[in-house]
Amino acid sequence: MLDRLHDHGRARRVFRLRILFAALVSLVVVLTLLGRAAWLQIAQHEHYLAKAEQNRTRLVVVPPERGRIFDAQGEVVADNVATYQVQITPEHSRDVAAELAMLADVLRLDARAVEALEERIRVSRRFDPVLVKADLDEVERARLARLKPWLPGTEIVSSLKRVYPYRELLAHVVGYVGRINAEDVKRLDPDAYQGTQYVGKTGIERQYEDRLHGQPGYRIVEVDALGREVKVLETQRPVPGEDIALTIDVGLQGVAAAALGEYAGAVVAQDPRDGAIRAMVSRPSFDPNLFVDGISHQAYRDLLEDPDRPLYNRATTATYPPGSTIKPVMGLAGMEYGLLDPDERFFAGPYYQIPGNDHRYRDWRKWGHGWVDFEESVFRSVDVYYYDLGYRMGIDRMHEFFTRFGLGQQTGIDLPGERAGLMPSRDWKQRVKQQVWFPGETVIAGIGQGYMLSTILQLADMTSTLALSGVRHVPWLVADDREPQPRLTLSSESYWQRAREAMRAVVGHERGTAHKIEAPYPIAGKTGTAQVFSVAQDEEYDAEELERRLHDHALFIGFAPFDDPELSVAVIAEHGGSGSGTAAPIARQVMDFWFDVEPDADVQPEFSEYGD
Figure 1 (cartoon, rainbow, N blue to C red):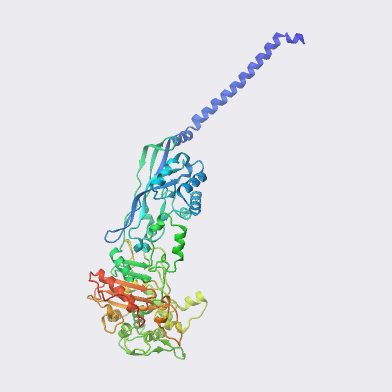
Figure 2: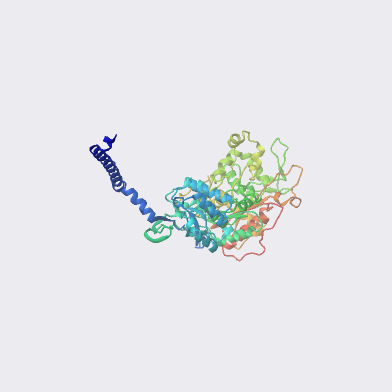
């Protein structure tokens, strides 16, 4: 053992081996480090350069300014105002859930709002900013600024907020924008809407979203360690959205809304010469500004549960029996099919009976009208005349003729959500209800009741076709290239004139149902009522004993001037009682404004239980 301890040669060999081993290990470590450094510096150069740049710079998307909307006279009906909003970008956040919780506390967001934000963040790209709250006040901005170190993904930005200066007046036409939600994200182009927080939800705002939106721009900015902007390195300006001009005249719109007064209902005024809509009123209405920044759950529920349904567009979405307003078209169909000689007199008693059936279809005038010709049947609104004509015509020929006027079909107006109404037929009833068609259903269809349903826009369009003797145009609100409609031709041009003259007598003849609205300019029209419920055979309609909600709807269609029509109007006043006493005076007030005539104080809507 002692000899081994004093074996200096062996000790030197062990030492050299250890030195060699250490050197080899060191060489391997050095080579590994050099290789790693080379791989990072050469192979991964672009990747880490980009990451380094991201630590120093930030891409800020600049959303485009939304195009404004004007009326026909240049009045702004949808505008943008400067405001501040807070938004969160998930990619810049260390803990999105924690930031949302802090924001909810500072901004007093309710649970539903937070859930909606979480859903929006879940379906969005991480680098897309998500709106948390718009229209911040000074206190909210100060609180958020103080908490900035704990909110790396949150930023306050200046923005443009959509406002609707005419509020309820144009809500159903212009519509409104709202926050982009999870459903919107699925259908929108993510690149085009990068940085955008709002999208058109209803009306013109939705219909022309592509034109109003514009294209986003961007800024590349240098930021400090806290994420605050130091300077702007590069800028690409956004392309603003296109401004849009409507055919609507705000002045006429206001007069039409005021003329409706306390009645729920709708007014549509159209230029028959080209189809332009000059007024489209639906009452009651709502304030679209409530929806821009996100309406509260309670406020939205109140609107949905309101029995008057203010969110419902009564001009294009609601459908009603057209009542006696269809009688001029029924007369045209009768002449075209050879079922009616306009000069032949017909005895119109107090009721009509189908041959072999004892059911009595009563006239609105309980003692009847006596002997009448076609013109009298229109201006006195003789139900029995059209019961008989409808029975002889049959529902299928009626269906064929009325669809040529656009009833039972969408008009094609540039608004979303238009309803087609219903022009019934035998095939329709068999297909939808699996039932046969009964003769009595044809009889009541002859005066626009039963299954027949139309929108007020359809009635305005039908009136324009009558005004110009078959010339048709698609109704429109924003100027665009539109295909001309083929003219509706009849076997004799004289039929058009006979129908138009009968409508002129409705107002111009002293016994016409709308004679009280006779004006300094010649008006042609037709009154009507739409039944809310049926009256039994042995009962009489007594408006004074009924609740207001059970009164008939009042209707009127008309155009003026008679010889050179410039404006067609269709009116419904729900539960207004009669077209002559309620709806016709409303139309007269609309026409007076359009033709710059001093309003007639004696022409005011009034409830009447008699006649159309």
